[in-house]
Length: 258
Image (cartoon, helix red, strand yellow):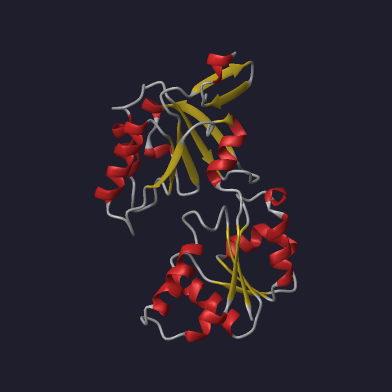
């Protein structure tokens, strides 16, 4: 049986790649990814056949990876972060589901053995860099309305605000989407203090990483780009400063026992 590894390689720092991900890539003859992800991996990808498809070709990448594996080539489909969070894993299984429903004509896909290898997500990397922001209940919301209607996204933000979840926004802005983040901010301001700490993390764990901690009422889409994660604390999240060091943590209630 042929093998397809579906691999998350973490936020960018080579030291944060899971050993299992390294093993999967080493075992593969063919690597399918957006080119930047392969560049970040460096020498780990040496000696492999690279299949680089640009942004916007996600379906093409998933199809290609399944086709290569079905041809008997041990293949790794690679994405940064965790490949199961807003990434390529879901497309692989959606295509398999469509094949089982008779909506695809690739029965050979069903003979492919698939292993999903998780990676450290951007929200985890960001939270670790500022302390323990995800210390209590949290959720993620993608602000991209390319695949999900804004009305649905808006309901989820309202629910996260009402539930007082720490919330991490993926895909906060792009060249064509510059208003959703400010709208999300205004929704959350109905449910939590203006002073709520917000992490803006750009290029997390990479050489040009930039971390900024601001108040919720200071959050503005003009300060964010598509390489940025925005995490908003809940009503109890704390921003503490010790000299030049800044931390954000979200308590779970242990203070009652201290």
